[in-house]
Length: 126
Image (tube, rainbow, N blue to C red; front, top):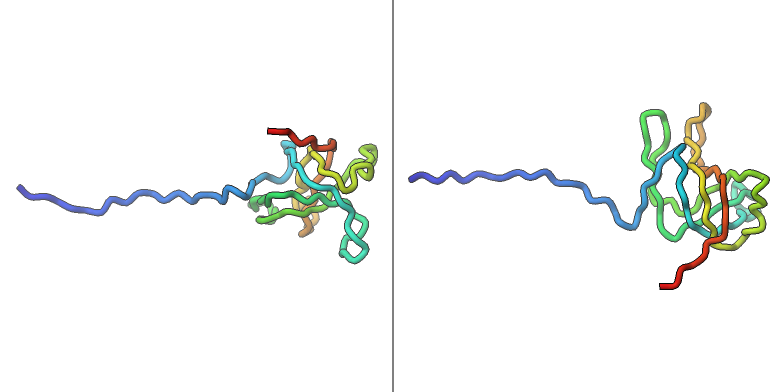
C-alpha cells in the first residue's frame, strides 16, 4: 500500500483590527460618537468644528479618487447652521451624516464629515 503525502494549502483571510471601524464616503449616512471641539487658532483650519472619537475609524479608498484613511480619530465637520452646533462644544455627541468624498469634483485631502443631525450622547449604565 502506497501513501501519498502532500501539502494542504488553505486560504488565509486577513483579519481586520477589531479596534478600527471601517466606514465609507458618501451616503448612506452613518452615526458617530465623539467629543466636539473647535480647532485652536494655531491649527491650519482654525475656527472649524471637529469631532474626536475614542476609537479610530478607517475609510477605504476607491477607484473614483477617494483617499484611503486609517486611524482617523479627529476630523472636521461641515455642519448645517440651523443645528447650532456651538451649543454642544466640549460635550460627547452623536452625529449622523456622511464623509464628504475627497473628489467632489475638485480634489481635497482633508477629511470632512457632513453633519445632518447632532445630539448629546447619553451614557448607558451597565
